[in-house]
Length: 254
Length: 212
Image (cartoon, rainbow over all chains, first blue to last red; front, side):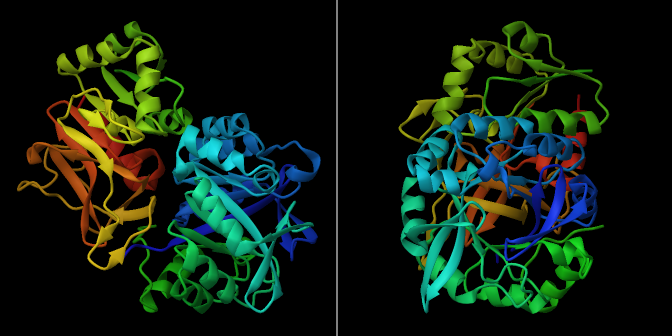
């Protein structure tokens, strides 16, 4: 069995790590490096940085944050928020990112997916999809961190994104984000049915069994944010719970 | 010891450089010229992206022959990810392209279909490695890696060696053995990212550098 990845998600505003509640209410939690160091020491499989206002204001401190992290953190980093061009991708990769996650700019100009995949490889090009349920079995793509409707159907957009070269799909449920009520199972199952690339499920983690629920419908990785930031659970404890539930995870000596 | 990391515009040099620093090396050069390469005590060829673009980058910088000459000198050469793939004779991503031909073999797409199961590509994640050689990982950078430890890989292509003696490490992807490392004499290729494989990866890199 292939190990499922446990990813720490760090939502960034300016220089700070923040916590979002359904991507609306915000609270500053502090220096993201403090959290990155902690998760690295705890054996995190990957870090996911998302600048939640970069799409709005068109600039980002993210490159500095990533470069700082890459000095001391030796696990893969996926970085998103405000990535608009191939040059933006190049800059983030040079700063230490391994993959970039693109949402708003890809919706605005889908060819960006193809350009990034051709230049840096599909494995670098993560399609970030923010999904909000519209009806049973139907979700709409939102952009600008859940603020703008796109009119696109999530499943059709995921298929298109993979055709254009996306090598991984980050699926964030706007409905579940910050709810602690579990990942959006229907959404993940529907995306998994059409995706032949890895899927990261994000939004809704509350208790370890939620991870099992979403892995069982096809998630290859899960992103956990404030449960880790607020120490409601630690990565070693989550890893141990996964093992007890027979979910394969990397063995870490910490 | 002077470690040269080849900078030909492909990928994440910063993490490789930091990882080498953490291993205690103080004399690190980002090499862009033939002289940088010939003068190295240890040469690292990193890289992310497509095979063809990588080889074009090396050719455009005039580095193909210097890398081959360096390799012939017997000093250690480490390819990482795309850098490991480019050690092969040919690459078959977006057409067939010539590689450095330091380890005989072809870079091909990982077979995603094994029996009734279809595996996802790219492979992204952490996995333990197996040693196909009878003496395991002895006398290589992987000598201290145990069967429970994992390394990080992200790729859709891998190097199929022509001579099985060059195959250093594999992992199992749904029943298919995928190449994770190759080695022939002083030339080592790591498909995995030692610079992104946490303390396990840093230890592997450190053991590689200790051979210098």
